[in-house]
Image 1 (cartoon, rainbow, N blue to C red):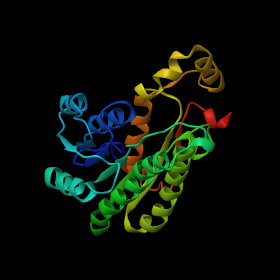
Image 2 (cartoon, one colour):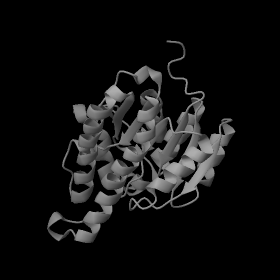
Image 3 (cartoon, helix red, strand yellow):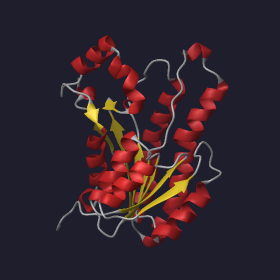
Image 4 (cartoon, rainbow, N blue to C red):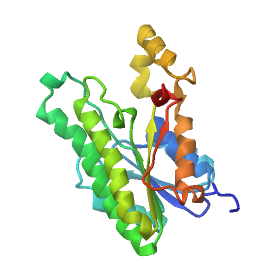
Length: 251
């Protein structure tokens, strides 16, 4: 293979790319040569600018992915703007915290709907075109809680465990049709969502002490993994959950 990580001529749809991991993935894909459509509730102004600074096309699609209502429109707008979707990254997600004994149905449904239901039906909608072409890459964002139980996040744990299972199930059906479905499970990453943990001296120390790499991950660490899974270098990788965790799960 020549330049196996080159994504020139490819197009990608990334959800939840306003900041953090989603932004880093979108930027990394653009650095590898892909044009991008990014989906979210708020305008990803900085992300669009960073993609365009890499000389790639950047399109914003405004949508609230807490339900599947906008799925068909999102796919239609992305196809209209980019011509097709070669790469789908399901990054959008939410978390709600409470003791399991006190967890509400509202918080349960909100997390499951966003993190699992919309992820599946957006993948389904994009996969129909990919199957017709005989090629495509779908990358789901899983979690350490795909493998572990966590504390005070029952719906998030259930959703991310579901993401792991769905990744394998979709790979089983679609690998022979030319679609690679895989997932990335980030460890502790320095983002706005983990700012409180980073600021808690005791908890921060406990976390770093358990990570063999001895540091928190950076969002860019996830971007590199996404480029690999989106590229021809991963053409024979199917149904895999790639932990990018500094060795957390190996501990």
